[in-house]
Length: 121
Image (cartoon, rainbow, N blue to C red; front, side, top):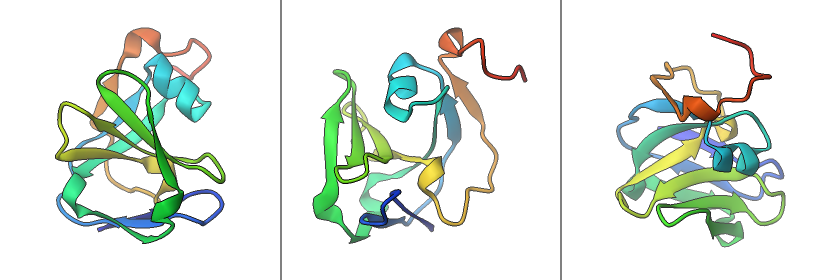
């Protein structure tokens, strides 16, 4: 089970079920949405995501035809990304997890737009 929260603590969630691959996404939408070089996520089944507190604070933004980004409307923390084409899956933002994610990151996505200022692997 994964647990996490937003920056202000208004949203607290847990995600039950099988944890699938984790990734760093360097697409420009993730960069803008996170204010960082990448958006880092771990994939879980959407049905397992429940809110312990603050569900009413979660809002979504349709960042593209293919995806929606969930965030806390109080502090702006990015909580997840979900595909409109694969509604059974949700990608939880790794930075919101408590304790921090200790699994491997299996994939790097959109490396062609990885910022030059990030360290080289």
